[in-house]
Length: 128
Image (cartoon, rainbow, N blue to C red; front, side):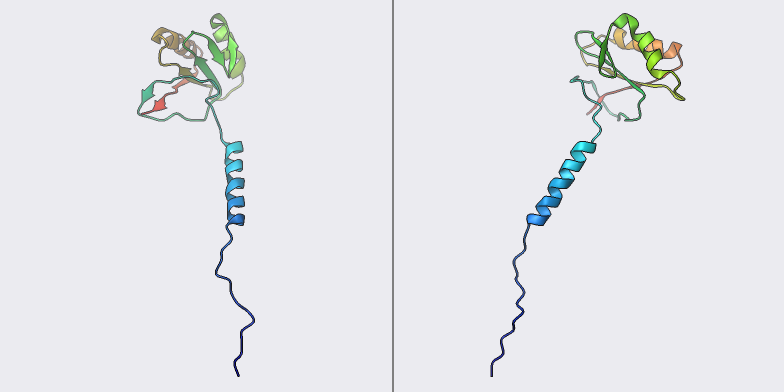
């Protein structure tokens, strides 16, 4: 008498649940990713790293337009805008993002304002 087993294990593996998990993780990381590069600036290269701990971001593009936290402002009023933005901060920090083609005197102007007001300045660069 030959007995046949009723429970057969299928050797096939379904990848549909795995791809669902991968797409959910992809969407999660895209939504939660922190992107400080809202303005399209070509930063100078350097060995080092930029930090994401910032209070205020100051950007200078190739047309010498100033941006404080992605809002365009007049270069004459940058000190006033920085004082407003950093009022009440324990350790006021400025991330300076000057485009590669901007003259050094423009970046030094922002650094001078930070020095007068005891603000810490971090120069943003792109990695080598």
